[in-house]
Length: 286
Ligand code: C2E
Ligand code: MG
Ligand code: MG
Ligand code: MG
Image 1 (cartoon, rainbow, N blue to C red):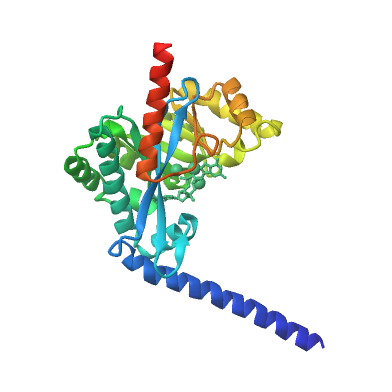
Image 2 (spheres, protein in one colour):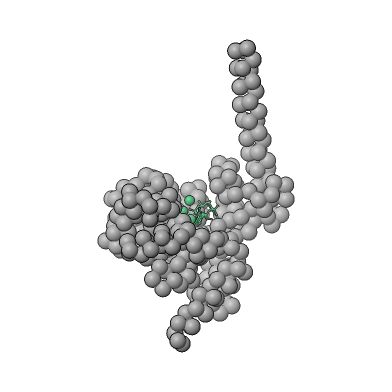
C-alpha cells in the first residue's frame, strides 16, 4: 500500500510538472508569432495627483490575447519572454506603441501627460536601448519629457552598470522611476546617487495601510525620504477611500489603483483624460 501511495504521488507530481512544461512551451511558441499576428495591446492606467485629482501620467501595461491560448497575463509571459530573448522585440513594440499613443492624445488636443513604460532588466542593459528610444521619439514626434521608464529595484542590483545606463538615458531628457519599491534589494547610498525622478511604492505596502500600522509606518517613512531626496513618489494599488485618506495624511503626492481606474484601452484612456479636464473646467467656472 505504501508503494502504491508513493507511486500515486509520483504520478501526480510528474503529470503536473508535465503540464507546466507544456504550457511554458506553448507560450514560448506562440509568443514568437504574437507581434506579427497583432495579438498585443497596450492598456493604460492613470497616475493621479492626490491633491488635484488630475491625471498626470498613464502607465502602459501590455495585454496579450493569443488566438491559441486566450488572454495570458504579463506576469506569466514576461518572464518567459525575458528568458528566451523575445523580450527585445516585445519591448521595442511597447515603447513605440506607448509613444505613438501619447502623441496621438496630444494631437487630438488633450493636455500633455507623461506615458510610462515598464522595462525588463534585459531591455535596460541592452546597449542599443538609448539609440532605440531616440529613434522612436524622433519617429513618433513625442517630446522626451513626456516619456518615463519604470525599472524595478532588482534591475539596479549592479550599481555601477545601472549608474552608467541611467546617466546615458537621462541625457535624452526622459524620466525614470523605480517600480515596486521596497520589495527588492535596496541601499540608501544608491538612491542618493542615481539620477532617478520617482519611486513607486509597491502595492503590498499600500493595500491595507489603513489597517496595518507597520505598513503605514513603512509608507510614511518612504514618503518622508522622497521629500528629503527631492524625488516624486507614487503609491500603487490604491483600492479604496480609506487607503487614499491615509496616504494623503502621509503627504503622498501621487496615487494609482483600481479606486481611480483599472487599466483600460487607449480609447477609454483618452476619455478618462478628457473627463478630468472637463471636471477641471467645471471647477474653474463655478
Ligand atoms: P507593475 O508595473 O508593478 O504594474 C502594476 C500591476 O498592478 C498591473 O498588473 C496593474 O494592472 C495592477 N494594479 C493596478 N492597480 C491595482 C490595484 O488597485 N489593485 C491590484 N490588486 N492590482 C492593481 P499587470 O498589468 O497584470 O502587470 C503586472 C506586471 O507585469 C507589471 O507590474 C510589470 O512588472 C509587468 N508588465 C506589464 N506590462 C509590461 C510591459 O509592457 N513590459 C514589461 N517589461 N513588463 C510589463
Ligand atoms: Mg510598473
Ligand atoms: Mg509596480
Ligand atoms: Mg509589480
